Amino acid sequence: MTKSLQAIRGMHDILPAQVALWQHVEDTVREVLTSYGYAEIRTPLVEVTALFHRAIGAVTDIVEKEMYSFDDRNGDSLSLRPEGTASCVRAALEHGLLIQPQRLWYRGAMFRYERPQRGRYRQFHQIGVETFGLAGAEIDLELMLLTARLWRRLGLTDLRLELNSLGDAEERAAYRAQLVTYLSAHADQLDADSQRRLTTNPLRVLDSKHPATQEIVAGAPTLLAHLGAETRSHFEQICAGLDAAGVSYQLNPRLVRGLDYYNRTVFEWVTDALGAQGTVCAGGRYDGLVAQLGGKSVPAIGFAMGLERLVEVLAAAGQMPDSAVDVYLVAVGAAAQQAAPVVAERLRDAVPGLRMLTNCGGGNFKNQFKKADKSGAQFALVLGETELAENRFGLKSLRLDSEQQSFTFEELTAFLTAHLTV
Ligand code: HAM
Image (cartoon, rainbow, N blue to C red; front, side, top):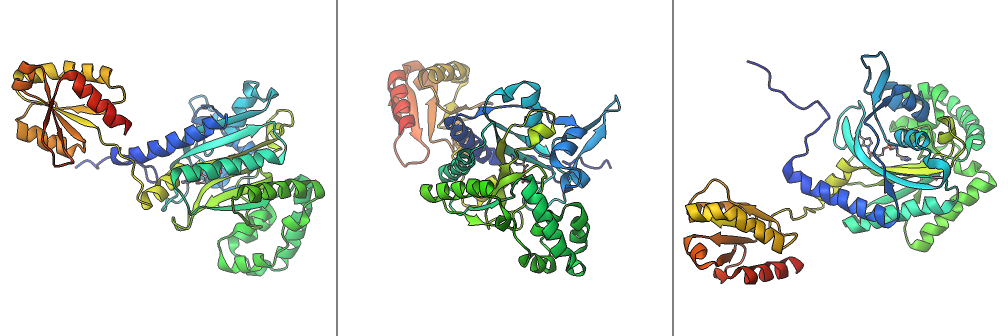
């Protein structure tokens, strides 16, 4: 027997029953971003591998072990994008968008060969935001306030904002040396991964999940204590702005992020509702990346949210938007069946926005009413021989215990229009 074909491990179909919630999240994010003046950009799913090596960093988990890379028929090494920031910077540079400030956003699938678990997939979806040419703390604050607004719009109340500053390059280098001295003195108590990172990427030791390492890390010097005057002031302006706007946050000196391009502000929105993979949105400043990828020095900051995680939090909170249609058109008898599609078109013209399913495949009244009920529609619109002969329409609520009403076409459109605006 042939083996049944299945989706690849860690890559999921999003089925019709779940799509309404996805669309609700996507539409809400798009509306909020548009209201802040952000413009959408769409970049390819595949880029040259070197882009991610240079942007994300050669000794990050993503580049070391999580990329889907392959040689194309030309022998060029390509990769499925593991994130959107690198592509966005590449596209902005390539098309000369960086001569003035930009506020961009994107959405789409990202690919990482991670060990799949709840909230962690090999194909997942992000909506991300990247801003360019804005150096001041106002934009850092705007991004956090914008996300806070988004959570309110989505009805998410239990997300926690965690905040840190990674300083500028020199501050981080000086801190890194101190951290290595401290951690080296405890090297034998660190887990194997952290021992390796001690030489490759010591800041990542700070967010180790290993309990013994966490104990050592608890006593480590913090970067926040090593910030220079300018970086400190930048960070304090953000904190003051959040206070003034009434958005609460927690300073997390262990927040370092898994990608190398960050400097100064880093932040994450975290929930306890998803177990270990609780970060639903994460980002930070990356003032050095544009120059690193061949452009002039352009300050930048952005974030990305994981849609699977957001959808899961909303589903757990019992939020499921109503995706049912308003009307199910029941047409009984050969003449009514034949007339139904044309009547439906007239009705769609007269009542814009009406969600209507038309019965296909015939059936008697009972049978069609069963299907109407199952569709979740509010009303059954009845077109039988009598209605056809009298040029009238029957309308029966499928949700309330009320009598079927008989309407002319004009009465019907007036009724349905009023129903839609309630
Ligand atoms: P990231 O922290 O790697 O940052 O990913 C951002 C968000 O994407 C995470 O907080 C999470 O919600 C979601 N995510 C990441 N990996 C997975 C996965 N394997 N399965 C499900 N969801 C996942 C970035 O990607 C940066 N590009 C964000 C950024 C934009 N920084 C500046 N601009």
